[in-house]
Image 1 (cartoon, rainbow, N blue to C red):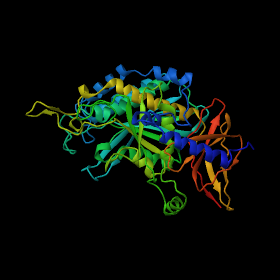
Image 2 (image 1 turned 90 degrees about the horizontal axis):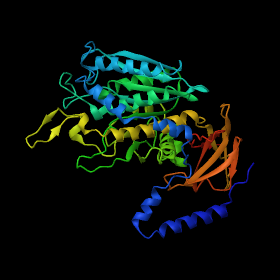
Image 3 (image 1 turned 90 degrees about the vertical axis):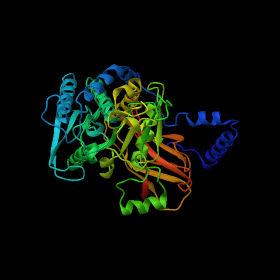
Image 4 (image 1 turned 180 degrees about the vertical axis):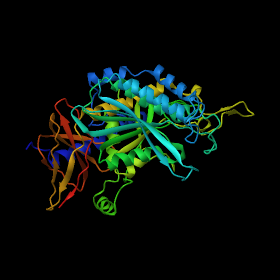
Length: 467
């Protein structure tokens, strides 16, 4: 077992760090320090940089404009018209994903996933809801799955209006365009784990398509270790005209939606409100995608979604899957959920493509690609991570279950002060399943992450107590 830092060494370093932070002479310097890469950051590989260079803003724009051209994509609109309505959009999306699959050497398949939704909220009559899926099978650990989605349905002011033009450029042709562009670029490559690219329907009526997708994955026992939805990622301009073209928000819950009463009791006794699997997934995105290769700052928001609002990641959270939502930095509500019109002052309303920033959408796609590709190439999140509590002691022993990946090299222990948002320290542990750190579990938070021979790191597993 490798030696760990001593309490004396760590406490001295922590005190010195706090003093240095307090000595920052001006707010600008403090802000700059706040944007420093976390200790757990992973530099992009040459392979990843090459992948990111293939993402194309012009193709993204073409996808958005094509989806807008169907007039409306309302979930209750026509399903059998070849030119207008959600059915025409569905068929076009399937053709596009089949075209991606044709370049994959048989590794990618594309399909429709349909069911009939009986009358329910915002569904007045039995309605077929169809997700359009492409699955890129992993070459090493295909049983481990990551999902990326956008919703292709659209709406206007009246959520039940299925006939008026509902262009849905930003909400959410932009997210679907990200999904299609990722599928195109990744189809020719060999991820170690499986990636599902999903254009889902029924979001505006009540998350129906994503709920069905999550249900099907859960019923099949699928090991989904991460899910991202891209919803309203088309614009970098806020309603007041201010621009923030190099930031994307990532909403990630703290207390898990699926938490049981027993799990809640443990959390209250040990902490961890900021350490859900989804919060660890968000930290992982910062680690791999907040850098010069994407050109983006990932602003993690400590909420499940925007205030009193929701998206297609929620059905995954409800089933215990780590999931998070990408959204533009500040929304312009004149260009979402609005009838297309010009008011008496000359202001244009409606979710039209001229209000999208396609270079920004490409950078959002880079963030997604960096996260998904690294997740798919890295080891899975460690399982069975525990802190041994059989005896009272001021040191901390962690245990976990060794992964089965053939290229697994070992593990790292990470830790941070309980008040710190990011992991601040990394300790190499080696290819072991137990490690002791000379720090009190009372004072800091710990985590465990896996490393493979290529140097790719997994998301962090937050340990539970083991008596």
